[in-house]
Figure 1 (cartoon, rainbow, N blue to C red):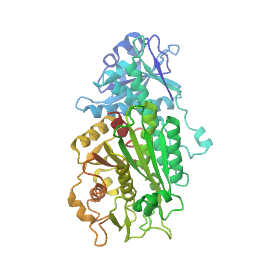
Figure 2: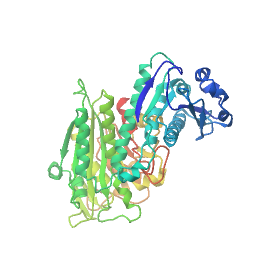
Figure 3: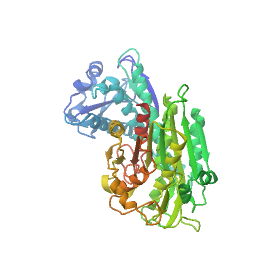
Figure 4: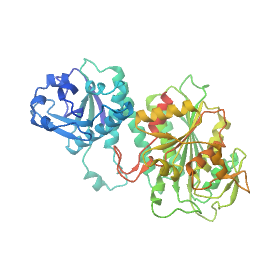
Amino acid sequence: MDLRFQAGGPEAWSADAVVLFLAEGEKLEQAASDLVDSIAWLTIAPGTRDFRGKKGEVSVIYGPPAHPLSRALLVGLGNLSELTKGEILDRVREASGLAAVRCRDLGLETFGIPVSSLFRLHEDGERVVEETVCAAMLGLWRNNRFKSSSTRESEPVDPRWMGILAHEDAVDDKVRTAARRGESCAEAVILARNLANTPANHLTPEDLASEAAKVARRHGMSCEVFGRKEIIELGMGAFAAVAAGSVNEPRLVILEHVPSGHEEEAPLVVVGKGITFDSGGICIKPAAGMWEMKGDMGGAAAVLGLFEALGQLDVQRRVIGLMACAENMPDAHSVRPGDVVTTLAGKMVEIVNTDAEGRLVLCDALAYAQKRWTPSMLVDVATLTGACVVALGDDVAGLFCQDATLAQRIKDLGEIVGEPYWPLPLWDRYFENLKSETADFANSGARAGGACSAGVFLKQFVKPEIPWAHLDVAGPAFVTRKIVNCPAGATGFAVRTLVELALA
């Protein structure tokens, strides 16, 4: 769906439908007084009498067919009076996605949303525009790449364009920028969704590296790719151990976005777990739900989504992304429980559970990032532990960070873009769970506190002076039921938080 802009007020606008968001009990005259003044039929249309503005309510109001704006979609936001600013944006995202899908279901080719009706909802009007555009595009997205052409052809066709409608003679540049930013963020999230939904027989570590190279070429970024030989030669024993049982070669992908004049800048470094399929290795997972492990590269997908957005938005900041890509498979060459590996940091790790593989690829990638660069900030993103899902549920990511300023920033940015995080502790007491009689420490411990002990494991590989955050997105990165603006499957969670962090 394209994004368009129309100025000049209702008399100059033209779309198959105009979309208006109304709070519970709010009158049309309050929500869009300037529109009502110009489109008299809105106030007398019978359907408006039955609309209450309840959360999720959608009504289609019809006017004269010959009018340039002959339909209005009224979408309810519910009661906004006691909501936080972040919660109001959540309602806007839900309403925008609902409106876009209803337009598609009605067979409409175009729809538009007046800027003035959005600005009244939040003190940051540009942010509301951005979220509205992004949510509409994400709401329309469908996971149908692997459906036959006949199945896809039977699905309703998306609208051709969405319009941002201004009353002024020209659309304000800030509004245009916000809308385009929302469009770019949606495309970045969709890239991450498409990758994490791709079956493992269609997306190997090599394939994921190829996708990263495409993004780099598209935006003039640098992309380095290391294979199994280089990973071993570098001394990444933990990373190599995870990949030992797979016929598909591992890849360490390094992306760098360096705008002119920022070459000497201390970079933001983001590391993503890229396990393209996780069988659990020798400690094999139960069959039920194992198919979801095609999405165990959601962290790497989020990193690649970030770089797509960096390129589209021309972000003026040096950002480096590492994607640690491998398959965790059982085989005669697989790492065994009880094996000891030497990490790039020189620490000896006993692998007591081969299904605790994400932290093994991440620890070497984190160590490499600090050997090669001095990050201004280091963030890793991973679908790391089921324990985090048990603790926080499917909708919230775990935030592990001892830098109070960075932790609050990530939490605040996540609230703005609808990606909630909750802080969990990185206390050294959890290291007791990782004690080993054989090596410096083990890669896994007791089930209790599993998400925290995983975070503390990674902590051993990060220099204390570097601001570092670990995002465990195991719950919200892949869902088995439809949620707002996303069908079941990969969500692209964390892409937008990383974009905001790069822009901040």
